[in-house]
Image 1 (spheres, one colour):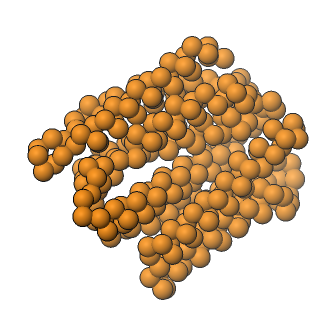
Image 2 (tube, rainbow, N blue to C red; image 1 turned 135 degrees about the vertical axis):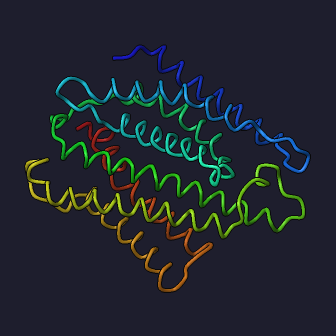
Image 3 (cartoon, rainbow, N blue to C red; image 1 turned 90 degrees about the vertical axis):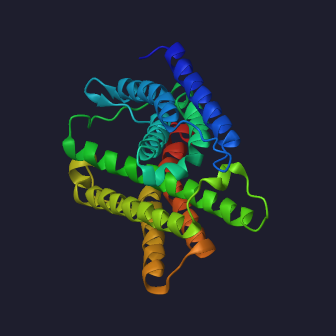
Amino acid sequence: MPSILTYLCASLLYGIAGWYFWQAMRTASPVAGVTPSVKLQQYAMLIPLGMHGLLLYQSVFTGDMLSFGIGNALSVIVWLTALIYWASGFFSSLRGLQNLIAPISAIAAVAVLIPLLLPSIHPLAHAGMTAFIAHLLAAMLAYSLFTIAALHAVLMTLLERRLHHSVVSSLFIQLPPLLVMEKMLFRLVWTGFTLLSLTLLSGVVFSEELFGQSVTLTHKNLFGFISWGIFAALLAGRYFYGWRGRTAIRWLLAGCVALVLSYLGSKFVLEIILNR
């Protein structure tokens, strides 16, 4: 088990990186020729991301067991969210969307410490099963992409409100047009929806092998399929009726809430409230 000092060091580095990103965005002014160093921003985030990933590997994979309680689950989701968002900054077409890197760094600074506060009590004996690892990875990636999509939707909402003012903050100057951001949002939703579908399908097909029982109507499964239905309705509404703007964002956030209640909600009830 890694030392507490290592966790604190990773959290501190996330905090420093987040502060640097925030200051860089506040002082950025493309009109005046003042723009933050993209490369410096990217490499500043690499160290805490690497430390966080190493801590998760050592914490989750413990011998032949898989330690994946709510603390590690939350930490993995946030780490993947930060990693995907950070990696997108290397693509020139997505650099204008890096405004969320500061709040994501702040969230990651807290998330890296959560396994210390909520350690895994009941390790899983599926660490060597490729099907289970694939199932778990698809689920975590789906969570991460929908987290980015939700943050992206909030950013779009703030930008739309700011556009009604004559003076736009420097935090929004470098953002692409709303229509471009909307297309990117639905690409995230499509990718997340595909991974969520694979997660639910693998859970149904391999339930007997993975968990020793056929699929039952549990809290997790119920809200999992509800979230899938909401995202499916959102994509269908987009395709057939051209849903966009506030309507699309409301459906997206509703699906994200159902998804959180599905996995993390059930883990919280079982591990924290019922202590099982």
